[in-house]
Image 1 (cartoon, each protein chain N blue to C red):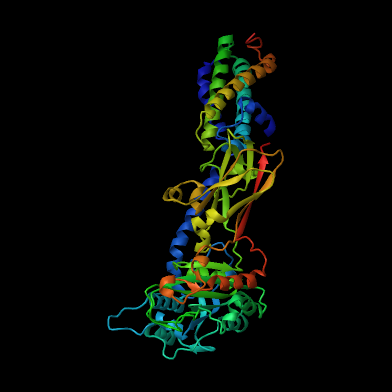
Image 2 (cartoon, rainbow over the protein chains, first blue to last red; image 1 turned 60 degrees about the vertical axis):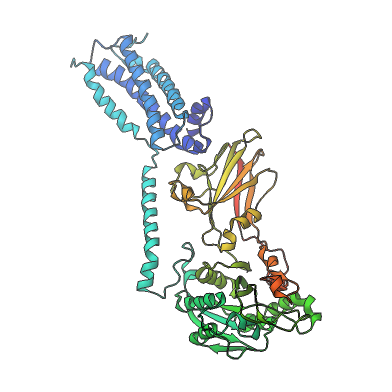
Length: 130
Length: 465
């Protein structure tokens, strides 16, 4: 699992400054990766199964509503990376923001993939976003 | 159940915030370490005072903290030998009307007093050395130092004295301290080339495998007759000297006892020094990844990500090293428990070596701690010296490196040596054939082999995975 996240997050190059590499690889990448996956899944479940099935909300199933969740998820993913780096007290470096941006992109990707898989189970939004 | 969906956002965000606190947190480890560190520091500052009040015989509090309980216990016994031959009279002139004394009197009297009051030693015995050692009390010996020698011995033979100390006064946990000018004049000049051999024989005769020696060199003004070893001119120079004359403390005993005695009672003396046969515990050391580091490298240890307080690291994982992007790393050393000689920056710069194969790593700088490093919040505040290493290429497999402090002879030994002391005022503060005496000691204690390292710290260079 660690090597999977390391592969994902080192697509933009190895961590900077180099002295923080062990902390990024052993702590921050797995934490951020797992949290982003879990939150993306949770938001997909909230959108398709809570709002558009269990609660039966009829007016929150359009593509733009889905997009609100998608963007919210990306913002959360960005914040997760910043918070994790901050709590691990790594040396300040612009790399932290590159990592956060990359994680936001992964947030978008996970949310999209989970939507494709799980949308069929929804009653009101099984065809959202398309 | 037609609730507007935005009512549910707060609860979603609360769940997110809970998740955000993370799984692999090391926050707890860190605060715990910080607290205990502070506590140790407080203990250290209060301990000596408490010890002095409550239990004055509980050992020297200044000796290394890391050592085991056994080695911080007081020494069983110290024998102090003061040479009282005629040649020593100039160091201990009878007090004149102007109440002036020599630096020898000042320093030796103070040393004897410190020793006599020291909790680091159990029993203290005092001797005057004439043809053989005569037992004195502290008061008698201190009185001799202050008031002058009453019945000077004709002369004392250094090899005989050393033989006596190594044979008869050698005991576990016991050291002998010999205070003398160490002017060795063989009876006939034909023996002069064999001074080294005579000394080696004298020390080796008892065959003490654990024997160690520390030599401390001092200088003092000198008021009296000087007896040169080379008697081509006068047999004695009356009303000498315009120059200072060296005198020495030789500490002889089992290596462990000598090391502890040095640390407890001679660490603060501003003397020249050289040590033989003492094995020092390896000083604490660690790589520092945020102190003057350059290039792409990180700690190669598996535990590096935990960053526990006080952890030490010895592995450098090199991502990239080239002449354009060299890797520079700093090794912090805590040499505070070592004798002053091995803390001396000039000595370290000359004798610290980096040994490794198939690497161009080399030491580019050795620096001592500054106020800035001591006040730093980083791990560099624990170290007294910093060794900076640079490398510009990295092999494909890991390589071991060693930072070694060579046990080289300090320069003062040859500077304090003269081959002819018949005109001492022009020669200056030097001792006849002193280097030969030291050669003899080195041969006897080092068994003639190349002296081993004072300490060595193994490091590992590895390519980043």
